[in-house]
Amino acid sequence: MTEVHFYTGVADPVRYACELIRRGVAKGRRVVVHEPDRDRLARFDQALWSFDPLSFVPHVALGDPLAERTPVLLTARGDAESAAVPHHEVLVNLGGEPRFFARFEFLMEVVGRDPAEAEAGRRRWKFYKDRGYPLTHHPQDNKR
Image (cartoon, rainbow, N blue to C red):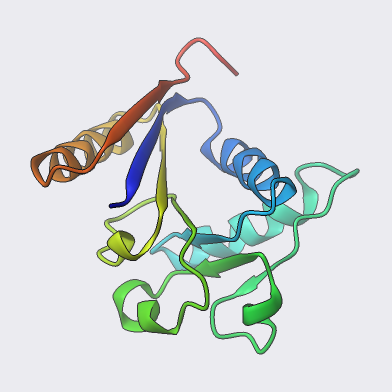
C-alpha cells in the first residue's frame, strides 16, 4: 500500500519540492512529479535547473525517449499517461488529485501556505485517510 507523506505549511513549495527530489535522487530513488497545470509544471522544470547552481537533478517530461533511463519525470497529464510511467517508486504531487497514486510506493504531498492550497491539501489528506492509506505529517510552518 502506498505510504503518503504530507509536507504542509511550506513557505516555498517549488524550492522545497526541488530539495526533496534532489535528496531522493541522491538516495537512488526514481521520482515522478505531478503538476496538473502545464504552465506551473514548466516553471517547476526551470526551477529544477536553477534552484541550486552546484547540483543537477536529471529530469525529463513523461513521454520523452529518455524517460525510462531518467530518475525524475515530470507530468501534467495525470491519468491519461499513468500507464506509460516506467517506474513507480515515488510520486511528488504539487497540486491536483493524482488518481494514479496507488501505483507508487510513496506519495509526497507538498502543500504551501496559501489558504486555498492548504484547504485542497486537507481534502486530499481526508481522501487518503478515509481509504486507509498510512499517513505521515511533516509540518513545515516554522521552517523556511
